Length: 386
Image 1 (cartoon, helix red, strand yellow):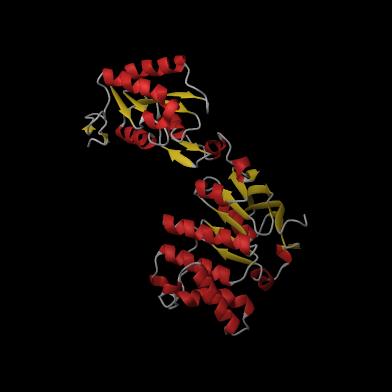
Image 2 (cartoon, one colour):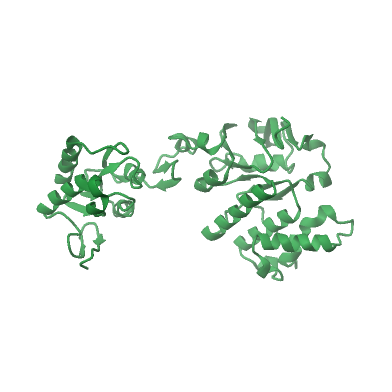
């Protein structure tokens, strides 16, 4: 166990003596990022609160830097661990800089007077999370996203070895989500800061985490690196997804497909078809698509949204039987939407070229050589003649 900076053994957490999650096993090395995922109400926040001693564990131990956390004094713990929870902080008449400066309390005397080094750390922490412009602003008058970044700066200012965060990106827009997590990642690399947090954004959890804890029922269902967690079929099982789908490779979510006999055939590839698939799904129109290679950018969305997909294995030629099957499916549809130029695909585009020519003879192609709008699909396809 010496190689792990933080770990738990037999940790059991709950409320009022009633166990919620039993025998939690977590192991974290210095500089690693560990993320808890799982459905709402699964107990992720309860685990975090038990780790930071806001809740008393019902059993087992949590060990930090070789010492049981239950045996550490508050001041000892505050010099090694800092916390950013979703609980709203409401300080009275404090600027953002004042709030960040409270992170220095483990290092100040009983009167809390900041020295030269403390002021330097406050300034550096604010620069790290890019909130210098908020320095003199009343903390209570900032947005939720700004508050979250101020609280991160406060935690960084504490100079911890490990930081615990509960859903830290909840109030952030996409720019600040990425910026926030990039800051954590850089600090884990450069300063060997260890991070334990919960996230709802599975795509971000997969990209940033060294280890992932899956909380399900009364136990940790899986624990390991992302490549062992995001396996086909597991995430829908963990979250009990009954509507729509989740693609573990890309982290993308799709709504339920429209059921029924395909009315539109989409010639797609290179990611050009996915926006059309989603357009048709929103319009409630069942569709078929092909011919796609199974490693094509369009394939995950096609598999999730199309009523029928004509596909071939990666780097394989489309055999005559596959082309004829696609042609038969196309014949049964009232319209054909072409999202790619087969000529741009070279020899690999020959099957699509044949299908397009076949559809043009039947007068089914939506785009053709001019801008057209399909009355049914509402899709406009622009070409060089528009």
